[in-house]
Length: 231
Ligand SMILES: Nc1nc2c(ncn2[C@@H]2O[C@H](COP(=O)(O)OP(=O)(O)OP(=O)(O)O)[C@@H](O)[C@H]2O)c(=O)[nH]1
Image (cartoon, rainbow, N blue to C red; front, side, top):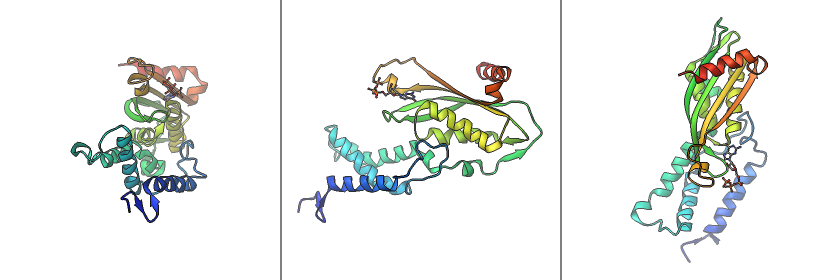
């Protein structure tokens, strides 16, 4: 029997069975688009062998020899790297907040700016990166400061578009502390526009979501934007 043929199923057929099984278990899956992380894929580490096989096939498709020394461990390394780049799928807002929400009579704006962000463009599977600034106006509750950066991690470490990422961060902060308003500005460099395609190396994409008073009151919005743009 050829090496590619085991139990009457060849490797190509196995891939198709695996993909179909995966699609079935994701029939009602909305986690890619939902603002709630209400569904999780099977344990992600369990996906490593299948992902490694896929990367090995990819190397072959590139005309490379996956058996040469330098590439022997590449499929597994690449699979682990991809799991890391998308580790946000494994995180829930509740876990990440870890109850670091404190009652506080502070009703002035809180801004954490220039939070580094690395994400993956869902159209080309190449990175986009940049910085995120978050502001909120507390209404009796404040959030542990690091948790704002952790919220950025939950939603950026997924396959994304920048607009959705921006909104998901704002909605998460709203859920966490029910403030009078939330503002999020994301500035991103998309490698799909730099390394390929239109090849505009200096272009930046700026997106924002304004909720509550930041949407309704121009002065509050202006104060936030001034703080974000100040050095
Ligand atoms: N709105 C939005 N678009 C994005 C984001 N990331 C990538 N894109 C765009 O997704 C689009 C996909 O367009 P297609 O024409 O289907 O793909 P393409 O032929 O690779 O497009 P080009 O990048 O123009 O070469 C491109 O215009 C990308 O710039 C994002 O975060 N937000």
